[in-house]
Image 1 (cartoon, rainbow, N blue to C red):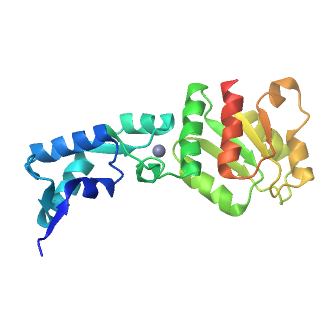
Image 2 (image 1 turned 180 degrees about the horizontal axis):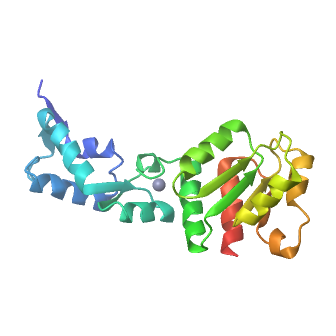
Image 3 (image 1 turned 30 degrees about the vertical axis):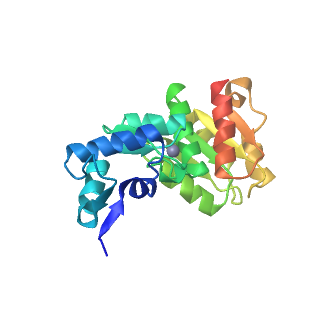
Length: 209
Ligand SMILES: [Zn+2]
């Protein structure tokens, strides 16, 4: 048995299926003398080096604008992949893409401090993890006692407050954040849809207004 692989097939397993991406990836591999331009196959011994060359040179990215921004900032050449599960920025996850879009929208509007009121512990953990280092985040447990004083501090502190109904959120908690003067209510958004992506999309829509 010959220990070699079809090059295009190997590239496709990495999401490198768009014609232009394939051409550029092949050119990089040819330049590194890993593949022969006249051959459709490459030896299996070279697969590891091929992988390293591609990883060093390219940032594999889907078509989402937020992911393009991440790719451009990576210092590597963006390489369009399809399907988007191969995207190094979002991995095809709606949540991760929504996070990237949200961070981008916040930057444009100089929003740095965000309070999220409500949500499950798991969702809070996910948001904290994904927004860490990009957005200053305060999470308010919607099921615990929350004093008016604490709420006032949060209202002063935040550039944006997301009150997430349809989740674990007691009226006693959310009431602290509603019905304030216009200077405050301007930065408070009520979200009634479930899911991280829906929450962040509602925030993005608000920020774009
Ligand atoms: Zn992506």
